Amino acid sequence: MTINPNQTTAKQFIEAVGRPPENDDLERCNCIRAGTLGHMQCGWDEISNLPWFMAPATRMTDERRDYLLEQGRNI
Image (cartoon, rainbow, N blue to C red; front, top):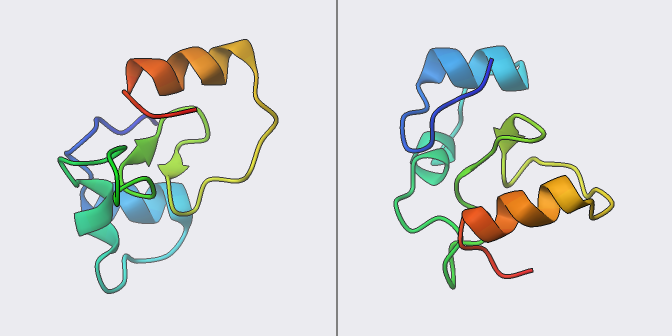
């Protein structure tokens, strides 16, 4: 399951993460400023299929670099 950016629901979050969203989890997943200064942990990492604040630290690959650049994130 891949979640569309800015459309994460509680049900999708539970399916991907394995627990219900807490506090501001959904707001961070759906943040329209994801990837900008002060919002680098907002949004959804489509490669790991997890919220950015839960995505594992991974080795930089060409696929991940291209994905981050497409999302407008600084790498």
